[in-house]
Image (cartoon, rainbow, N blue to C red; front, side):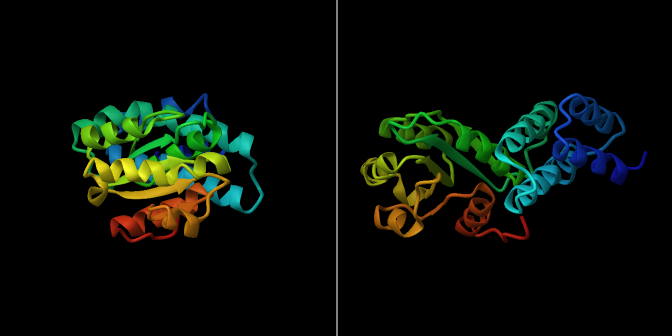
Length: 220
């Protein structure tokens, strides 16, 4: 089997929610001598891009997207140690991501993380209902370029201003770009509260994050 055929099968495994075969396919590709970055970028991540397009056109629904995320992460678990050992050349930036204090919803974050990872954004997940201090400490520890606030309710979205202020007080605001995500967000309101942008769609958010990082957005 050629490399292109193997990559096509990996992408199809994610797109077709094939949790049974994704790990063996990744292992087979590695055994054939394929580069871990190619397996991720042109195989697993291509599958996630297809899932995003299908979701945006109404041909795939959220329960299926969640399964696709699980399949993607199952394949990533095999290849990630090799990527880390090789220096993670595919990574364009690091993102600290968590739900703002008071928000315990997980679905949106669980969808967004694999979408971001699939596009070369390493995600440090600090969980749900994260305190302002938790964001500050994570920025100090991981030195990300991007910070993502999960704000899936209007009430928690309105806490954006306080969380941004805490990051400013810690002297870290100039080091990061901040983006809000979730169904309750509004980009203009987020900017008024001190963030850099917002999106209610993970795939659109990827393009915005890349622009904030100064990376060509391409066609996600």
